[in-house]
Structures are given as structure tokens and as C-alpha cells.
Length: 432
Image (cartoon, one colour):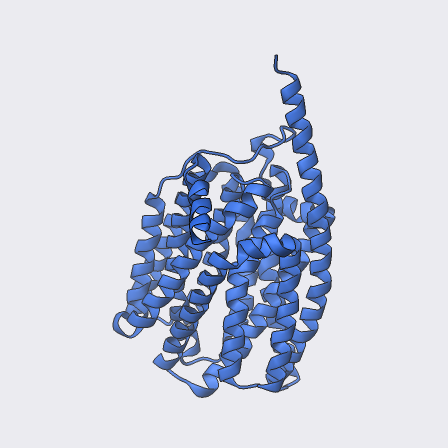
């Protein structure tokens, strides 16, 4: 069995598209290595001297600022694509890290600004990476090869979390920042191939394939399938962000100072070990067993079960385990599934839909979360356990949404395959 599995993996990677997949995996490895070096830094800086409520409001501020920045980013996409876009964005973000390093070393309080910035980093850097990758994959190759790229990301996240765990107290927050900046610069030096694994319709030119943010929003609102994907993404991020607040509240109730950063370094390490295991050994077999749509539905059902269990055991020890499971499933199955959901779409619809959903709608869930926290904690002055009940209700709604996404993914995939078959027959009929 191991020999067969190794043989299948080798056959996937020895082809030109396999080489492209490997290069993408290395880039994502370095991106997420850098990101996870900075995640415990973010938590330590904002929670030390602050609270989970401040963290929640900063998350909402991150969403609001992103909505201002996205139109500017959309304008850049019109003029830069592929490697040029990746290089420009990555170098700019790496220089931002060094700016935070110098400001923090000079004694400025960078906790909230760095928290907001890192959230923007995770959206812009990773979203534009996956948008670029989507040009190389059709639905079938995406199911087969996207998981390999994600394995590279999971490995980078795990190693980043390990380095942060073992070196946090030695290097400190600012030392980890410098190391993260170096990883991003190395990612820029990784070459990529021009091999493409998908055929695009000629109905739209490259110049019009990327439009401004309002065009992307209009595309989502006008396309039923994209509306359901957007709803699923909003709920996923709302549930996840609310869970992060609950965890932060538990942590600040028991820990302080460097203990907070050390806790999160441990937490992210375990999350990313689990993420790597799931990505390497579960995601592809899961797709083969229940399909992409079934995998999405299972995410919502599992989240529902986990938050119900927290009502019985509302303590840090248990909720940390639940959140580790939640995050590892989110970072493996959910992230890979989300990228595949866009693959049946044509280039024009895919680019605008991915841009709007991976930026606006992703952070819109965080923005709603800020309002939920304000209402439940600040206005109504209710205990944190009420947020667990809120997440249970949201999970029930998410189950309903995932059924609709699954049905529409199947329909769009069949439509895409039918169109490809027609084009292939026409091209074949024109040959002598």
C-alpha cells in the first residue's frame, strides 16, 4: 500500500504540472512559515497589557481597514499579475515587518497596529497566491494537486510554530519578526513555471479578467453560486473569530506576560502538526469518499458537535483542545475545499469572485464578530459562555448553507466539464 501511494505521488510530481505544483508548495511553505512565526508575536503583543475585548475590537478594525485597502489592491492587480504581483506584494509586506521591528525596538506600542496588519497580511499575501495558482488548475487537477500545495503550506506552518515555540523566549517578539521577513524575501527568489493545467474560454480577454472591487461584489451578488460560497465563508470566519475570542478570554483569565505568548506558541504548534497530518493523509481520501461538497458539509456538522461539547466542559483545558481541532480542520480541509470551489468558474468570474470573497467577505465575518462581542460582552454584560451558544446557532445555519454550496458546486462542475468536452470535440473535428 505504501509503495502504491509513493508511486502515485511520484507520478503526480514528475510531470511538468507536478514541477509547477512543487514550486508553488515551496512558496506557500515559506509564506506560512513566516506567518506562524508572527502569530504568537501578535497575540503576545496585544494581550499583554490588554484584554480579549481589545483583541476583538482590533479584529473588527482590521476588517474595516481592509475594506478601504482592497480597492487600491484591485487597481494594482489590473497592472501586475503572476510573479510580478507576487514579488511586489511580498517585498512590500516584508518591508512592513522591518518597520514594526524598528518601531517596537524604539519603545513604541505596536500591539494593536501589528495585530491589524498581520490580519491584512494573511488576506492579501495568501489570497493573491491562491488566485495565481487557480490559473493552473482545472477541477480534476485541482482535486489531485491542490492538496499537495496545501501540504507545503501546512509543513511551513508547523515548522514556523515549532520555531516560535522553542525560540520565542530566546529571540523575543522582534527577533521572530526579522526571521519572518527573511523567509518572505526567500519566497520571492523561488521561480515558477508557466505550465498551465486548465483551458480557459476565449470569451473574456486577460485585460478584463480582473476588475475593481465593486465589480467583484456585483459578480458575487449576481451569481447564486458565489453568493452561497460568500455566505459560507462569512459564517466560517464569524464562528472561528468568536471561538478565538473565547479562547483569548480563557487564556487571559489564567496567564499573563510572556506566558501568553508561550501558550499561543504551543497552541499553534499542535494545531499545525494536526493540520499537516490531516492535509497529508485525510483530505484527498475524504474527497474520494464523500466528495468536495460532502467534505464541506462535514466541517459544519463537526463544528456544531464540538461547540455543543464545550457547554458541558467550559474550561480552558477542554476548549483549547476543541479550538486546536477546529483550527486544524479549518486550515486543512476547509482551506483546500474553498480553493477547489472556485475552479469550475471561468477566469473572469473566478478572479472577481475570489478577490471579493477572499478579502471583503472573509473580513466581513470578522467585522460582524466585533459587533457580536460588543453586544454580548460590553452591552448586555453576559458571561463568555453565551458566545458558545451563539456559535452553536451559527453552526446550525452553516450546515444549511453548506448543503446549498455542495449542490451548486456539483452543478457548476458538470457545466464546466460539459463545456470543456464540447470545445475538445470542436478542436478535434477541425483537425485533418
